[in-house]
Length: 361
Image 1 (cartoon, one colour):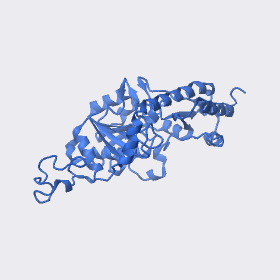
Image 2: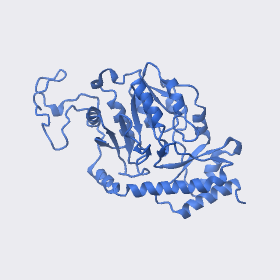
Image 3: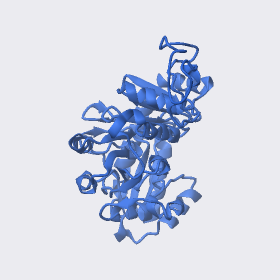
Image 4: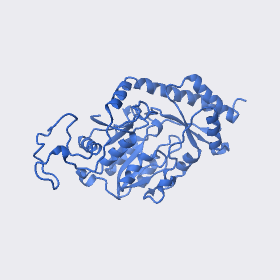
């Protein structure tokens, strides 16, 4: 990628990336209040929140059972004359169907925002995720592939979007001088913008309703130090995923195991498990049992975002039904593939799950 800016979290990265698409500098393609943005409800709220915060309308499409990403076959039916963008995360490091999504974006002239916060290093058809869309995001939260404690990034090949994103990150200022530099444009005191007097200092001219979302030097140093180990971390996550996938096949009578998206090489963030309806097992009972055995679990974030308390009365649209999203909400959970997990630890996890279902006894 040609351009990358750092921010203080993955959620801030999503906010900045989406904000960039609302800029007046984009003319008719700018997202405006009332415009629609397609996404999923089975995911993390801050992939969707910026849409609502800017007065646009999220349009929710159901996910598929195997990958827990958007069901690409349902997207076109969700597109309306108001649709301006598609904003999706690669669920737990598993890429969504980028062939289908990019084709629709091209056909309907839609922006594509790739939330890669869980997917650093994943590829689709041999190409890194985040390089297919117009703008993409990363998170460096402690649980992610590399960490700065907190941190994130926005990246793009579009120089104009980079400049706009940087403006939103840096208080909304119009000046694009890098830190420690002045007068990059060679007309610092020659601009005439807004209703300001001619020659007003460009460093103190603001073209967007911006934020202050920069990282510290210490965070940047932590991130740079981990980059050299990123291939090692990704390989360990893939190994741990493969171990769990192979060993938990013994429980497939009761559990639906995750599947990689066709033509992809995921960079796994977690191992997602769904309890089969036929298993007649209560998820709360299972995850409480795992917790009692010191095995941490997580739900797939918001489950069905439309059912979260803060969404009551919000302006959104559902295309079709969200039946499989509800299945995620009711039956799915995930366990970690953190690089520090040993095969002995993973074998312990498998043995406890097998014991719960009476497998091998």
